Each structure stands twice: as C-alpha cells, then as structure tokens.
Image 1 (tube, helix red, strand yellow):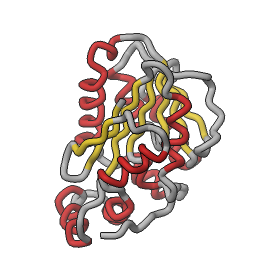
Image 2: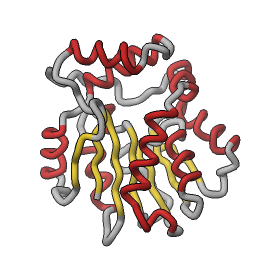
Image 3: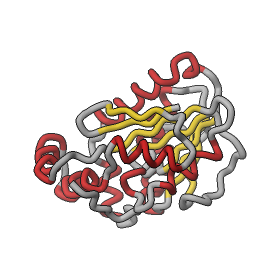
Image 4: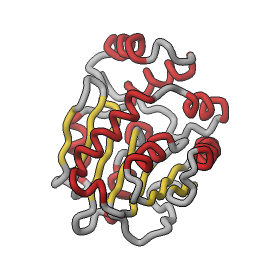
Length: 219
C-alpha cells in the first residue's frame, strides 16, 4: 500500500479535545514500559528530556511520573493540543518538572542547549517530510544522549487498515476511528524509516517492530 499523508497538525479544538480525552492507557503505558526497559539503569538518574510532538502531554506526563528525577520540555506545533496539555500538567501537579512549548520543527526555539534524552510518540507519521523529525533529533544526540521514538507502522493493505481500525479503535468516537485509520495509511514501514535514518546521518540508531502496528527507534 502506498503512503497517504494526512494533515500535519491537529489544530481543531474538537479534534484536540477528543484526542486528549481518548483512552490511550494501553498504548501509552506500553510506551513508558518500553522506554524504561531501554533506559535500564539510566532511568533513576536526574536528567533533562526533550519530547518532540508532545500533543496534549499524556505520554509526557506518564513518563514524568515514571522518571520522578527528570525534567521534561515538550514541543508541539498545535496550540489546540497544548491547551489540553497545559491543563493536564497542572491537574497532575507536574508543573515544576514539565513545561510545554509551542513550536514547529525544525527550528523550534528550545529552552536548553542540550538534553540527556530525546523522546517522541506518534509524530513521525504526521509529517509530510519525515526528515523534519530526524533533522531536529540529530543535533541533540550528543555523547550518550538517548533516543526513544515510537510510531505507527503502515500495514500492507487498505484492508489491513480497516481491520486494525475495527480491532483497536472500535470503542472510540468516530473522529478518532477515522484519524486512526488515516494515521495507519500515513505511517512508514520499517525499511522506510531505516532509509530515513541513513539519509539523515543516524544509521547508528536501531529500528524494530514492537507490535503489529508500532515500531520504535532507539539509541
């Protein structure tokens, strides 16, 4: 199946609210579990983490709870998403360790010159040009800076997309069901992501599938 790009930003308030209120507990908790496994002994250290494409901040906040010594800067281009993200940070009492910043990649103004880790969840498939993410990541990966990117993986056929929508999103509002299927069609394959990393000078990163619909990129 050929890739079908989708809009880069979720800037409609109703769409952002539906996404923020959706039940992503299973995939988002899986993200945190896989990240902790990747970090190993580094998980307990005080560190500064950059979250690219943080959206409404659910993954950012879950990760902050799992890494209580870490501070997080989340960047997203959607003001609608960040409105719900700021509310979530306040409600969870994480305002001393989590700050969310509106900015577009590449070129978003970051509050720090360097980070101990870079994370991202479900941003890559939104980008019309995937190099935008990797070009933002590359200058931050200095020394032993870690990387953890999780995203959807494009199925082989349109029929597979419809089946996954019915299997994984049937209980969600119609707008989220449509978005999920569109996101599957907009996602990249493992081979495509490997080629992107090679092109952007990140061939030292590892790419692997972790489910029938998710891949991770790590360093």
